[in-house]
Image (cartoon, rainbow, N blue to C red; front, side, top):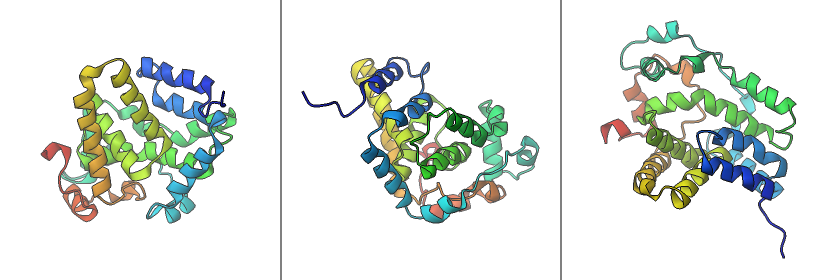
Length: 233
């Protein structure tokens, strides 16, 4: 019998996430994968990331922003990125996210040995991705409901083809296939909406959005090619 290509110990963890996605989220699953991941898959993900338009300079710079303050955001004029970000954070009770130091958390995971096979570029990309996730919610118009988050994940996946987002899609599609077919239409519509927008507009992952707090959202959307958002649909 041929050797399995997907490590079976990891497969058990994958199905643990499928069984109860809220109890064992994709973020934990993502960090469990690297120890037994096929090297060819790791190399392919790293090559994919480095080949994206705008990625090379950003990966070299390794920019990570300092945590923002609610006071600074509250002073942004209505209609700007900073104001939209402020409203998204406050309206969804996400104030703790502002103070979270994702770099430190990732360094702690790395020290545990779980990330020994995670390439540096991919390690940086996950930390930076968490920093800008809510900024991109503001620009795309996808809300923080479960389906809004699924759309946002598909948007990220379309622009980065990153393992975290691939696992998110895999968990959701497995959940609806084996456990809850009633959500198939809604979940697929959410993923298609995010994927389509991500493919249609400029890649948003390689900009310093923290430096554009006072820029009107409408101007940014026009520049990057977001012509129809979820809120306008």
